[in-house]
Length: 75
Length: 444
Image (cartoon, rainbow over all chains, first blue to last red; front, side, top):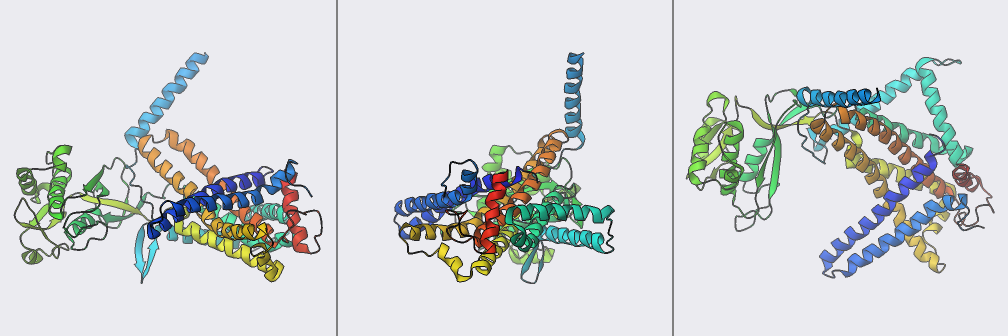
């Protein structure tokens, strides 16, 4: 798999992960809005939660890289 | 000299493309997202993607059985190859997860990698998406239009369609046994429009069938808004002679005498003032599709979801195994802002399943569509290039799925807080092994 494989897998995973989080937030928010009639409040809440989850998960996945390049949180 | 070589290459490309377009152009693909049902086993659907995954499983079992049935100290042939693959995978997994955890994770991670890569590469074989059973599109369209409660169409209470829908298929010859997607097969589509009644749709369908299967002259405009005379002329054209379909007229009860499978359904035509009880395609070309017997297993979202759930369950199991109920501290923490972060982490665990699912499905399905479309648009030349690309994508996606499972598993067995203090207090093997993921990543 070569030395490039682990970073590649990480980065490809992060891209899809971000997209999935945000899209899911929007879809669930829109569904909740349609069900409750609060449009667009729950869609905005969904986007916010999606972004927050993407950020937390993304940071967790990126930490090894941040350490590798010396720009991440150090002990 | 360079100019001559360049010119020759250009002409060669054009000739190659021309030969492809003349002799090998595939049928215009009908892109169907869900896996096609080949047969039913009780209440369960046996889909072509499921059949493919079973074939791949059988291949893998046979391969490793052959490789290990008479093992030698000095391996050769198939044993040598299998050992090289397994040795390579063990090395990669141990480098990332450490020896103890690596051995524990290896079986699942290597199985995922091998299963995904075999399925992806099997899906590129020429007989995939190429032959299968005939599906009668006409029967489906006619049933949908004439049924009191259609399945796909949405009929309002006022008797008008609430939504439009399209029914795509090919003009095909033959309808029995296994058939091949014939080169140069023409794709056609019948559309039901929003706001029209089933009777109006049926009249238009009669003209549509007459045009495509009985050489009846009609423009696109006339297909959309046929006059009463045109419907009558089209119906007269469908007389079953010279390989043309035969329209069945009369009341629904009388139509039973024809013995047609469609006789039970019937609908009055607003322009013919008769009930159309069916169109018999016996002896004519068919409005149908090839339902392929084999289709790439991971072009079906059900299979990628299943694999994503398996990966998720394994990761959670290893997390609990390593940390006991302490594993839950990562998600349920009452310490200030960590409480909020914990909930987000819990959500992120579940979103990984969706992320796993759509990453693999999206890549493999898009590749399949790309190959099918290019086989139709530019056979030979560009398909070869895309085949090479898809071999690479198949490998990369298998590696991504397996490696992310491994990396998440390492994260799950890691003590909470190791991220922030990763060179501190790894008292146990789990944490110590987990530390290697950072080391491995850092090494690259």
